[in-house]
Image (cartoon, rainbow, N blue to C red; front, side):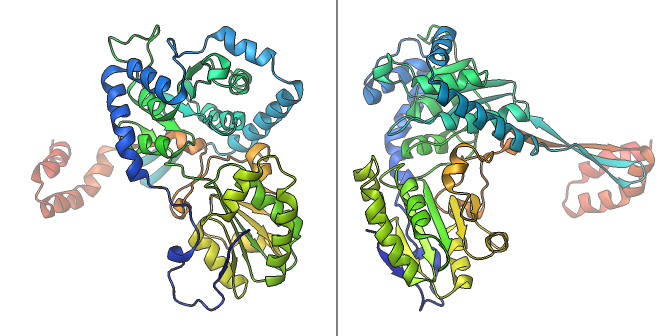
Amino acid sequence: MLRRLDLTANHDTDLRRVLPRAKVDVHAALDAVSPIVAGVEQRGYAAAREATAKFDGVDVAEPRVSAAAIAQALAGLDPAVRAALTESIRRARIAHEDQRRARVTTTVVPGGTVTEKWIPVRRVGLYVPGGLAVYPSSVVMNVVPAQVAGVESIAVFSPAQKEFGGRPHPTILAACALLGVEEVYAVGGAQAIALAAYGSAPNDSAAEGIESVDVITGPGNVYVAAAKRLVQGVVGIDAEAGPTEIAILADSGAFPAYVAADLISQAEHDTLAGSVLVTDSAELADAVDLEIARQVDLTKHVERITTALSGEQSAIVLVRDLEQGLQVVDAYAAEHLEILTADAPAVADRVRNAGAIFVGPYAPVSLGDYAAGSNHVLPTGGTARFASGLSVQSFLKGVHLVEYSREALTEVAPHVLVLSAAEDLPAHGAAVSARVES
């Protein structure tokens, strides 16, 4: 099912050009999304309502979900699901609390200090997708770091579901209730991103105004990614999320059943999901092929998984040795990377590019999706080369406070005057001279 890509003889090819990856054209999606975003900017929720009716097949007159509906969703939540979500929230809070940034004051010279303080953004819009699956875990992963950062106003946007009377899925609403989030909108897709960025128009038909946000986070499809690209600059965004992906770096000691199960678990998300095994063992590759054939037939979403595993974005990559394997996974820069090798912690420490690294046989990606304490909103499409996953830091702004005494300013003034003259900005120097000469 998985195609083979043999790189054992490769020595000088640009690996990023040859490794498997789903082809997702955000540029093409911009043409479809631009009128939606422009419409919401100009007409507010009225335009978003039209888009929801067109794409989701449901007309939602009032987008804000009532407090009663949120409470009802929590009351009707399966007790086992409630317990699991509660534990997921607890573990996420533990891990994210330690991401808080400390205020640091540095004495540059006597009488001259620079303090870096961290200020949370005031308001955020958190997107929780619908589509092929229900993602209450994404509510947890977006809300917890925002709350830990100290964000004072949180709005969740999730697609309206026809089968639930135009509201988001009840499990999404219940997760919001468990987290104390009271502002939830039944809007999805590009129109949700635009509504979060621009808010409702002055003459909006919505019963209650929607305030624009400062930052938008959360995964979505290519149209959500395109909308994020269009509003970036009006608001901050976390990333343009693409199809999910897993890479596994494994040697001959890896357990084939574990490898196959993890590749399949990621393929379950989407037909464009990428599942990549990188190994120096042809024997392991053969054994994984057999395990995949056995396990796929035991799963619920056979067609979706089969399509993803047989797509161009998935493969078994054969390498000469572990050193080349590390080069390959760094070039691939996976959203999720598993290390199933001898001395896995040491190997994981050598990885440069990955959204999150899962170390050893008992830390599967599925654990990180739900209850490891880590965040599962991660960079996709190779962007882990320069981007990080969602964290408390995503909702904080670093601000420098500069404080100098007259004596400290006088000491450095000659250097400021020289540099302002070198840049032909004499008024800059004059602003200093006015203070030290008075």
